[in-house]
Amino acid sequence: GLPGADIGALAAWKVTTGSPEVVVAIVDTGVDFFHPDLAANIWVNPREVPGNGVDDDGNGYIDDVRGYDFVWDDADPMDDNVHGTHVAGILGAVGDDENGVAGVAWSVRMMALKAFDETGSGTLDDTLAAIAYARLAGARIINASWGTSTRSRALDELVAESVRAGVVFVAAAGNNGSDVRFYPAATPEAIAVGATDAHDRSPTFS
Image (cartoon, rainbow, N blue to C red; front, top):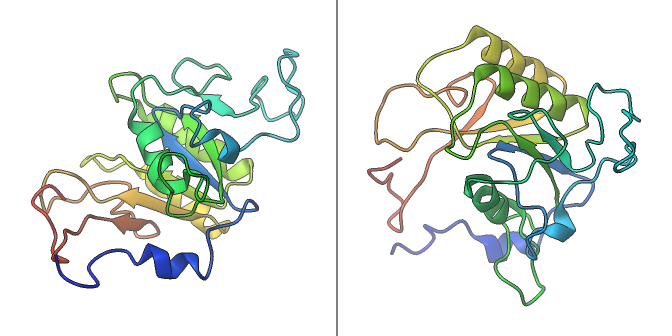
């Protein structure tokens, strides 16, 4: 490959490995919050009492201790697809622990928000609800490794509203090698992320 084409993680980690004060919401297929390389970095709702059947924090969601499943409308955002767990590992797998891999920011807290089912499919309503939840629950960053070529005014407005509230919104530019705009990555307020290869060029799939 080309020297310097990597992300420079070793140099970055000399500056910071992230902070447990920073909560990253992963809006995806859920997260395996029992995974040994992720469990220690999973966000826990400090205002919710586990398993008491009461909406302790008054946010409209009962027992949302580790996040929420908007697909099945329950408090168990366990991943039944793998994609969300894969994203969580890249983002914030525990580092320096002689186990598995190290995430790019391996000291952050990750909020598991399931908006897509076991096939990776989801609805606009569920993604909007998950994004709104993330912002109100205190996420500093929202990660959206998904998208569509169909633009939604409601999604655009919610992304913009979240960014105005101080949230960093990061979205995937797409996987199909196309120049067609992909949303929410193409929403002006979002940070769109594509892939580069070992020669610092855009690969065919990005």
